[in-house]
Image (cartoon, rainbow, N blue to C red; front, side, top):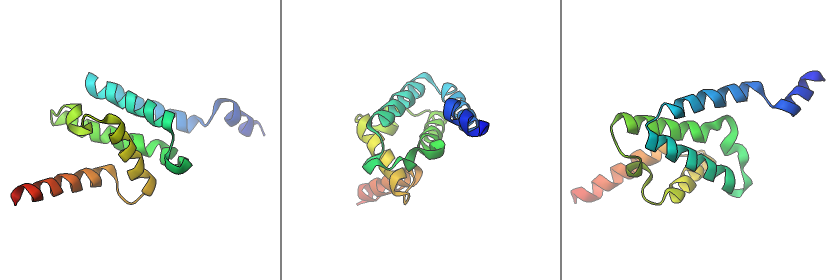
Length: 123
């Protein structure tokens, strides 16, 4: 009874710990990536999940995927706009869509788009 009450009042402590660890990684990103991550995160929370499917936010998977993409891109010295494009809202919408369908991860989508681009360029 007390355990349920505590979860109701202060939330799941394990989830808070995971979120805190994720945000420590975000704070380690270069400033432009950190700024973009926080803006995208706020945007996603404000618009919500596609078709009300809140499962996209469970375990912060969508944010972990974005963080991993940003960490890899920053390590390669890329600018954040090279990753998100100039329409960051669209990028965020597509990110949510990729996680909502569960069929294609952001990394898979990125790899697919880059491969398609170079196939077109070779012709």
